Length: 94
Image (cartoon, rainbow, N blue to C red; front, top):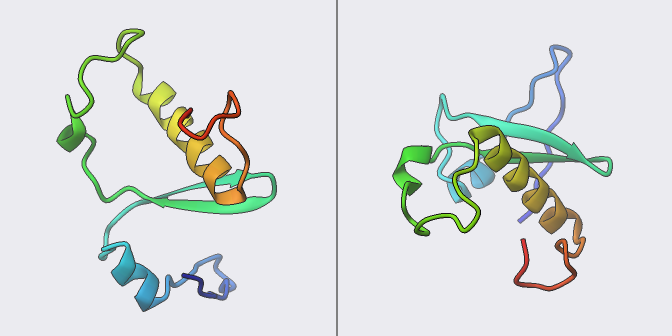
């Protein structure tokens, strides 16, 4: 899916309705923005982190800080969007 949005003079964007619908976005939802190799990546933050607690079991290297988790997610999403291979060069690696 692709869509265009114009930046206003106040630096605001309106996310097109079909994109909002596809991502289940609603007023007040947060979007995390990052830049990876010149690409702007917007990641919806409409899922409460607490909802995922314990989903994958205990982490193999012990608990990670929220900052470490956010950095890993931003890196993985950015690599996926720009088509770069994951670290280690294998599809299953993240």
